[in-house]
Image (cartoon, rainbow, N blue to C red; front, side):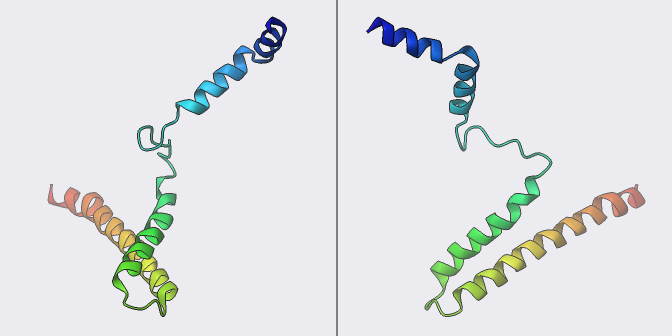
Length: 99
């Protein structure tokens, strides 16, 4: 038994233990992903999944489900782009003029 324990402990060096500890340390919803520069990549899947859920609940029949889901996804994305352009113009152009 001690020979097996020696083999197992020698196989696990400090670097593999540290890597295993780092891999286990991530907990979804408690430790968010570090996407500070690429956060906007999440807009497309979030809009798509929200559209899927909304259309799945609201449609009486599923005829044209995917077409309406993609249409709503495009509406959400274009709406977010429009809101961001409006807020950029408001903060960067209109507020300095008013001061």
